[in-house]
Structure formats: structure tokens, C-alpha cells
Image (tube, rainbow, N blue to C red; front, top):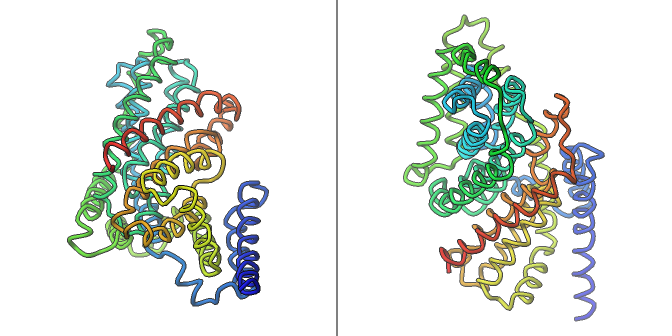
Amino acid sequence: MTSAAGTATSAMLFPAALFVLAYAAIMSERVNRALVALLGAGLAILAGMLNQEQAIAAVDFNTLALLTGMMIIVGIARKSGLFGYVAIRAAQIMRARPAGILIALPVITAILSALLDNVTTVLLIVPVTMVICSELKVRRYPFLFAEIFASNIGGTATLIGDPPNILIGSAVGLTFNDFVFALTPVVLVILVVQTALNHVIWGRHLHAAGADRQRVMAMNADSAIEDKRLLWLSLAVMAATILGFVLARPLAVEAGTVALIGAAALMLLETIAHPREHHAELVTSALNQVEWVTIFFFIGLFVLVGAIEQAGVLRFLSHQLLTATGGDLHTTALGILWGSAILSALVDNIPFVASMIPLIQELAPAMGGDEAIRPLWWALALGACLGGNGTLIGASANLIVAGIAERAGERIGFMAFLRLAFPLMLLQIAICNVYVVWRFF
């Protein structure tokens, strides 16, 4: 028995070591994370940890399809000028008052992050925010900080808002509606609380001269729209795609299929108005909107997680977790909520969630089956998505905002962000703690 146990431990050791090394390399950011994941996946296959068929089976096509489809749809919609128009009109509706804009732009960011995805949303909103702040001659940092938080809060609300939710939904079979009904109520509470805190911390102290406000009021929002036809086509396809997500279960289709159909439909509608000789160019441009680095990162990551799953590492860890919590569902859920929040603030939440999903699945038989452990999925989603607010490296959206800001001469320091962001993130998780206990137990 001892020899068999030793052999089993040895069999788990090498896949676990490879996964940890890959994770460490991803965290270090010295090498592009897609390269790390793909090389790690290749080594896992070469070392016999799993064969090519098992590696292919480990890749979640639904997740990749959903990400790819939404990237194409948003990329085409961006060309219409829709998002610049929305941001400028929001500032004008608030009469160009900085305190009002500090409410409007983060709320818009949260809504778009729920309906599109948070990374794309900040890419669209932040540049316009920088222009508005420059015209008003007010500090940009409060607005950027608020939009970082809003992007992660809004992204928590739906299946498509944040990559961790896409991973969870696809692996477990949770629908767009499941996420909305389970998570949107607490997300709305958190958004209201955070908006109020933004005002207390910054908004009440922000002021702009009358002449500067007048410049923003004089901005022509309509000039931001570059293609009206494409604008209306994009809105129609996005609305139809979201409706498809809502009806996915009755229609017996996966969210990835809905997203790819929406992307193909919008590409078709964009191209048919142009001469045939430009069709290939337009389709190529649309496909170039896909963040292929992210897609291939996911592919490699799925294979790496498949390798440790094949080796029994996740089964071993699930037994350790059961022992630590005494098999109590309530304790396990809160442990996952707080643990995933803190860890997601320190490391990228995508690989963390990818490794946690099969670990939680292993707990199902001991805790009453798949339906019984549903609260664990909501705890993981809340912790991983909102935990990303804790540090500047906690979520991809944070780093993108910091990069845009730095190029514009507004440096967002790691420690300066941490001192305020981490306590605010803990407050959000405390609200989630109350909600999870009240709603699911």
C-alpha cells in the first residue's frame, strides 16, 4: 500500500510542478502568458501527462467561441463610434459637472462591462474619459480608479462580463439567466455603495471652471459617430445576441454558438454594403479584432489544467479541502469566497479560476451532487471577479487602464492603488458574504 501511495504521489508531483512553474512564469510577466501556457501544454503532452486526444478534450470550445464571437461583435461596433458618443452624451447630461461625470461614466462602464466584457469596455471608455478630464482640467486618477472598479463590478453580473464567469458557466452549464438572477442583485448593491464612496472620496472635491465646462457642453457627440448604418446594425446584432443568451436554454444551444452566429451575422451585414473586392479586407479586419493572445492563452491553460486533473492532483486537493472544512457546504462556500478574492487580487484570476473549477467539481459527490454545490460556483464567481479590484494586477482591465493612463502621462502607482483599492475590495466581499449567506443558505 505504501509503495502504491508513493507511486501515486510521484505521478502527481511532476504535473503539479509543471503547473506551478507555469503559473509562476505567468505571474512574473517576463514572458508573454500565451507563450508560457502553450509551451507548458506542449511539455505536458511530450512528457506523457496526457495524450493529444485528452488535451483536445480538455479545451473548452464553448469558452473560446464565446470570447471570439464577442470580440468580433464589439470590434466591429467600435468602428461605428457608438461608445465615444455614449461617453460624451453622458458627460453632457451631467452638465459637465465633474462630480456628476464621476457617477455617469463608471455606471456606463459597469453596464457595458456586463453586456460586452470588461476589458473591451475600458478600452472604449478610458480614452474618451481622458479627453473629457483634459477639457475640464480635473484630475484623471479618480475617474480611472472608478472605471477600473466599475468594470470589474459590472463584469461580475453576467455570464459574458468577465472571463472567470465565462469559464465557470461553460464548465458547469450555467446560463446567462442563471448568472443574472444569482449575481446581479448583489452587484447592483455593490455598484451603488461604490458610487457613493467615489463621491465621498473624490466627487465632492472635484470642481471645474465655467469656461472649461462650456467646452465639454459644446462638444459634438454626433461627430463621434463615424458610420450610422454600422451603428444601427451593431446595436441590432448586439441586442439579438443578448436575447440569444437569454433564450439559450430553451433553444438548446450554447452561449458560444450564439456569439459566433452574432459575429458572423454582423460581419455579413457589414460587408454586403461594400463592393465584392473589399469583402476579404473587411472580414480580415473583423477577425483581427480578436485578441488571439488571449485565445491561445486559454487553449494552453485548459491543457495544463487537464494534465493535473488526469494526474489526480485536483482530486487530492479536493479531499484536503473537504477535510479542512469538515465537508460543510456553508463553510466551504465562504472559504472559497474570501480565499478566491484575496488570491485573485494577488494573481491573475483567469488561471486561478481555471484550476478551481475541476477542484470544486470533485467536491460534488461528497456534498450532495451538482445542484447542492451551486452556491460554491456563485462564491467563486463573486470572489474571483471582485477580488480583481484589490490590486493593480488583479484583473486584465486594471492593467489596460494603467497602460493607457501611463502613455498619457498619468501614472497609476501600484502601492497608491493598493492602499485604497484593497480595503474597498474587502468591503465588497463582506457585502457578498452577507448576500451569499442570505440568498443561498
